[in-house]
Image (cartoon, rainbow, N blue to C red; front, top):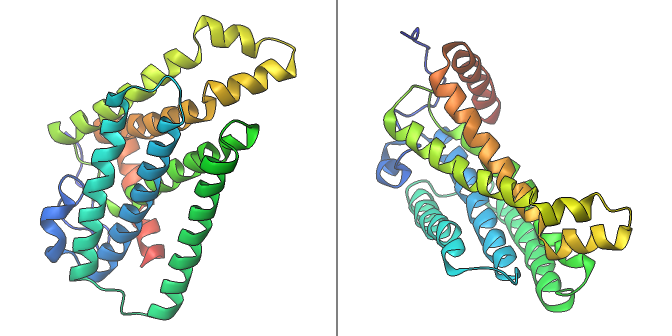
Length: 237
């Protein structure tokens, strides 16, 4: 039986599972962290959709996951902004958000319109790796304590599946043969046409979900994660 761990400041009972239904109960610090998390999910999901669209071998089911996350995150962010508007230094926060969004729009527009068939088309996939790490780091700070539950374990397990498929695809015989080739052009073509960076971002996301499974099932690791989470929450407060 796992020892009880004291809740970190600003932690709600269970915002991770259904944050949309618990928005009005959050305190201000937790609401701010959740807003940052949901905003990062929106950028990640939108980037993933564009990257999947540029894959010549894409299939409709591949859009389902990012599309559901995109719609859900927009709804959750809208609710959080409605309940907890940005009242502290609105001008500075608004300018940072506008500049960040403008930079993203320029990169996405350039990637899709001008460099669709060149090596610069991997720009969004590089950003996707960054968004993946940022999204899961913010999720780590925003959620509550790592306590075992079937729902959380099922979510973490389901999140590992796409990474396993991407890992299998990444190390397929054809890709491995090209990667082991000494011809730089073939390796570059594989990175571009095979969307290697897109697969890597999927694998990184699965590794974070694997960590979730370890945090909620292994007591010692979970206690360390809860302690680290509390310190990071104090920093974000």
